[in-house]
Length: 342
Ligand code: ASP
Image (cartoon, rainbow, N blue to C red; front, side):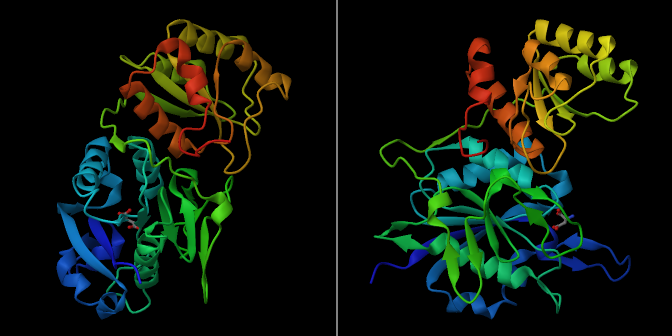
């Protein structure tokens, strides 16, 4: 029998660890160590668990690149000591954090599982226990003495997903996430079924690296019928802007009117990257399929293919913060780096 896995549980905040303030009725973050004592089941798991917590746990609406770096540093500092990591995180921005961590960690060879819950862990009907316990079990899984899952994942309501493929799709159902463009990596029922063929394979000969430079000089514009020139040019002319994601219609389509084309053309000419990401939750951008996207292709707009907006944001911040040269940027963005794009 192999050695028991050592798991580091990182609590950043979110509903999972919140309690109700009975005066106001609102949920607020709470001391997680005290809450953990309410889950005696954890001691029955076949692994050793250590916990660390953000000094001040946050609602994930306050998440930002500074906190991403904090989480990444906790994992970096403990990378050799632990076999797997479970990050407890509010569900609201969990997909963004999962995507960001996936890019920040290069040559990851251990599991990093993000999870949380829709109801606090102290609530009678909570979904937190299953999410937490199964996440720890997945992080502890080994094959031939090595971690079985070696990527940044998100576990919620009986499913394990590649984190950078997920989107929060529901604010009240326990099934809060989906991964419309990539199959789930595992399903938990009576047995834990790992879908091996969909897992990323690590290159263990390459050294684990943590990239901490993230550049947030980006913008996201969602197109809608009636969007006007003043609004669009206001966003595209934001001082310091380096890239903009345009959430287009369907398979990557956008208005063909002159004023729209001119703004996009001027922006690309200024060296600002424009990325075409569909506003549909599933499916892919296919530039050139319709005339309504051929113009974007000709103007040098980057093809976001089937990437989620969350992953596109994280990928831009990561690439802009790094050393990718301007000429190669489009090609690098269109290439899968962590299984985030087809
Ligand atoms: N507002 C909470 C958060 O994202 C919701 C949750 O935890 O599910 O922190």
